[in-house]
Image 1 (cartoon, rainbow, N blue to C red):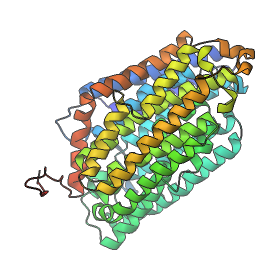
Image 2 (spheres, helix red, strand yellow):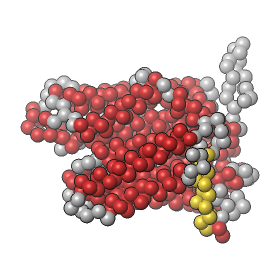
Image 3 (cartoon, one colour):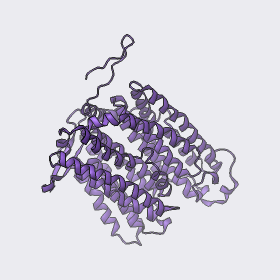
Image 4 (cartoon, helix red, strand yellow):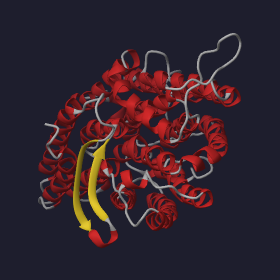
Length: 511
């Protein structure tokens, strides 16, 4: 099965499905939903087969495919996946079917075309798979930019209050970041011997000054996409206005393109510049952790609150990446996966709560658990996972990041730990104000608040809860896939982990 063109098939399949769904009659919304869901399940099955076929102890990049595209420019459709990309591809494959199920009635409530809504979700899946599977820098840039289009329409056409403003802001921020990266991509092509192939470019010797400018071009694009402080202001608007399902993909997957890009492109292609910029990146990470957490505490809008929590979590991921230890790096990649699961679940559950109440304002709730106890219980679990409670998957990630960072940079690790305390504050306060305490009399007058989770919604949340618990106690199947890729990335930048303390000193150990 390792010779099967998994990555090209996985990239094209959702696009074909999107075309099928888009051309279904508008008066057959149920058929459009069913076809979109079935197509996303096909992608999930193929992804599972690819995961099983991946050899964690084999080559760094597997399932490599290359097809000539623009030979005069050295551009090709080249796909390949290492352990980091494979984990993100599996996250996409798991989330999209669940988002489709969770969004079953979202398009109808917006009174717009149902087939187009689900076709946009499949187009988005195509671009997300493509950006993680690309092994050609130009191809990566194309997917990086094109993925803005379906998300722009999902927010602008199917979103809530201020959707047009949020969609335009999201598009412009990402477009500006893309322009910085385009300039760096062209510069890399010039100094790299007129090729866009990642493996060839990773062997190019670039002068110090040029390398720093190229790194900065890529890093700015990825910092905006992630988003890192101070490039984060588009996310609360976009996350707050987007439909819950689209928001789950936005913070669960799309934002990971930024941190993935840093790991795949900034560190291996510009190793010296990465080390030179690392103190600044660590500073942005810890500021983002504390600053976003403080803003989350003061939010009255549920979706904006979850968006701010994501900014804080991305600060942890950034710290894990730029700590330059394999332990912190593995924790950062694992955090990318676990954050997608936990925050994806939190966004979907918040969406279910909002759809019942007809409002996203926390002040419009109060004691809702008395009316919808199962939904309230799932919200509580999702909140505990988001604050990295031991026994949930995000705890493993956060612990690895903090321990791996503490061995090389104690002040950064100590400051980042404050984020755990603040996370408990904003999550528990949100749960207390929405589902606990005295019942808000206004809730009894809302028909939707008398309906607890139905079978479809239970099918949506059950797999995510199971994965969060499973990876919280047994992350080894994922870390075995991640570790070799992280180790190779550390080798690319010439960093070795500090050895255990011996006689009161810390010695650098080679691998």
